[in-house]
Length: 256
Image (spheres, rainbow, N blue to C red):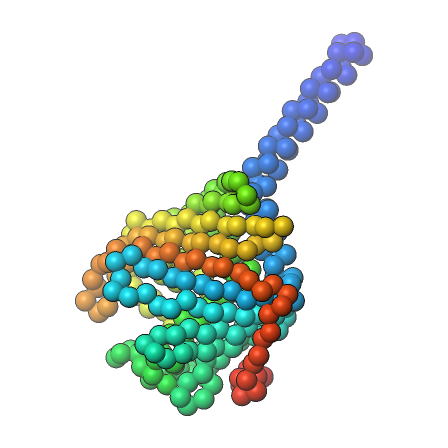
């Protein structure tokens, strides 16, 4: 084999390898772009967000969750329900909820049984547990991306993603969030679970996202099956200008 033939074969092999590497990079690029946008948001000094949840066919929908967070600091969450405002304060892996008896951790709340009131009624019951499981948008999107089966880039910084079946089952059960709330281990696995997400990136930073989960889940002691179709829309705002105010009682409880 002459010198020119060997050079040609080497170039051919190099180009094939380069094209293969490029294809791999290009196929992963949309996911990498969204992940980078979430990480960039997490590095901001502070930001606020609103999360509105809608459940198809429900008699009512909860008011939007209002959140404020600061880098390496506190996160304050509020949500109104039944004319009552629930407030939670998180820091790191710790969280406390305001109840009629003062600030409490998830372990100090009464178990969600027999009406689930306890520990301060609506403020210390189901709503409090939901708030204590809440993640910031940056952390939530990073977790969602771990469950993505396919993600595509669209126009104007929009990305659409399909979630794996396993990820959809976890999400429809409000799984994969902060520790704290007791979950019913005997509840049957969701059926026909599927989920999709949309992300909006502007100037390299995450500004909005939407998550839709669907499937059949089982409720109550009578094990009734119900169809679930839940959509959560999150809007991120006041990046770098958010003021996070934390009650001293909550700070003391978190530090104890």
